Image (cartoon, rainbow over all chains, first blue to last red; front, top):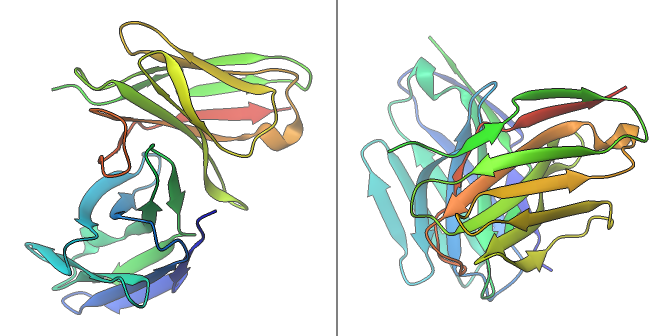
Length: 112
Length: 114
């Protein structure tokens, strides 16, 4: 089955700096890679996603890159703000059904 | 448009009991998936339902079961509860099934086993 590794597990940045979270996956058939943000007491919220036929996608301060050859994808947050503090999860989907494999999460702390 | 609604938000049970959790997907969404979230194991896929049929299943024992109704609402049942079943149970919905469909999560049901 699919295995997703996520690094780092914790990340502290100063407000205004950039943050990068990296994930690798094992199943070459995976073709959809969403990123979720989870705040305390809430469910994961989809913040950006990328499909296997695209190498990069950007939405305001958030961008995701995908390298299918190396089987890794990354989340980039620029100009971080205190409200970006949360746990971020990467995920990969493959096959014909909704079976999501999540990374282990990155706790991001943005220091004002 | 209302999001995914899970009830109840909190539940306390004792070992050996059974529990039923409910999930109402986003209007128009027909696929419902369930996940278990724990500090030790992270987010783990339980199963997916689409058109009242279980389409995919994760690696959980048969004590975990579910169903989906004709209006796409879904329930998850756990029988003979064990201490290790204490977790946040999350439901996610998407418009249809398939591996490129974005999933939208509810805020979960926090289940505590005493």
